Image (tube, rainbow, N blue to C red; front, side, top):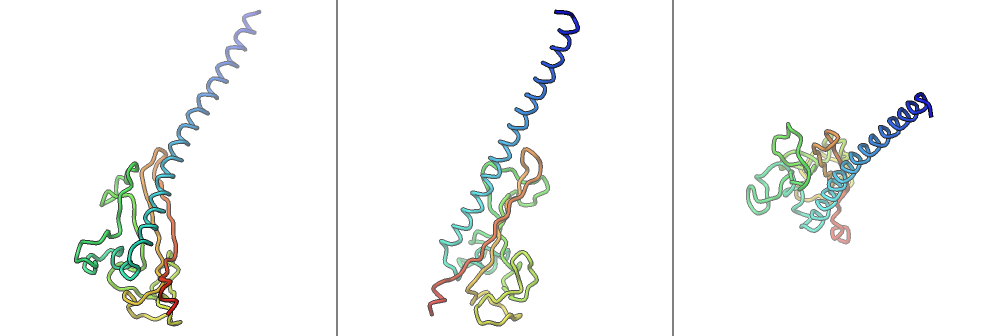
Length: 174
């Protein structure tokens, strides 16, 4: 073998090793991303299932951002934010919790004519076939809910959202 052939073989081997190592590195980073996303998806699904298990008439009061209407007294409800073990919050996150429950409105009132595109409002929430500007926090039969998980992951800032429409089916039977 000549020196030129040996050098060509070394170059080919070096390029091959570099490609292999970059593939392994990318696969490991992708694996971390998949694991983090799996944690976020499971946390969002668990929160929605937890909400389904609670008294429907209290859902809005339990998960809005106003503590004054909590069913067991001020500050007793879960509120809008929750933690997800294994995920780190964004560095500028004020409360340090990665999970958030989003219901229409920010306070103790639930208005059908609100402009919350995330929740598909305006929408008839109490089933009277009218979309009005009255407070329906006490008589809603459907409640649009979104769960958002926002975390600082291996590949930067990440978010996952899941939305649904919770309904009080017993009221439909009446």
